Image (cartoon, rainbow, N blue to C red; front, side, top):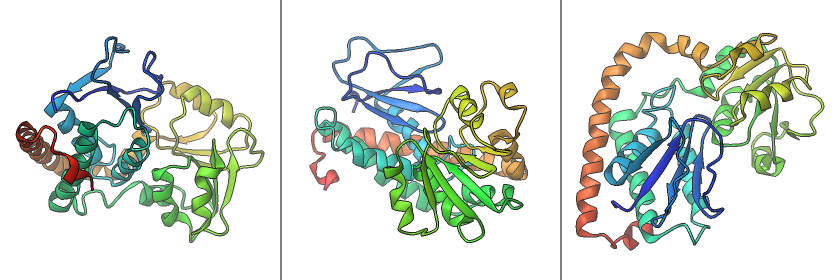
Length: 289
């Protein structure tokens, strides 16, 4: 497991120098590149972080358990990681036997930690907050097509007209099976959106602003993370994650202690996995069935 290294970046600038076959997991808040064992040059930039072996396992486990999410314990990130691993399995050149076992062990451990310690912790997730913050809006446009949009839809589908706008509408086609009245449009060509837009896609501030200027949007609920240039959005009723946090501020003190306890659990589980891997460095087959 010491051979497994990853590069963590908190913004969405691409990793220059990595091959097209490299595995990169992208979320709204971060992107993580899994570095090839024989990597000579690492595309490291100021602010990036490198994790190896046990530390890489613990870092990823904290993320997929929701301990590094704005809403602690939220479940969306776990679903995103499982989708990523499913897609990664198709990249035969990058998906080594060690990585297969590494990913599978992460998923199994995360399930265990969530079942034991996180039940109910993330119950006030993004879906319920979007419903609350858009309660006076009769229609909502969701910008994105991933796990986060999928988690939000059930919370607002019964009471609002809905539209999903994304780069590749084919990726959102699955939503139509469950929500027959859902409108699906392409980001580049859509001409009409609702006045309330929920941003659940990894766009830069500039990309988002340029798109908003082409639409008649009044309210923006931004779930991407901290704005780099908040002054750009002064013409909109803009509610970012910082504002969303006010809805759960009262719970932060209680959560803080629980999170510290859980991080200790994560470190312990990472150590257990590391010790097992020392005795079974190539024994992953049974984990990947």
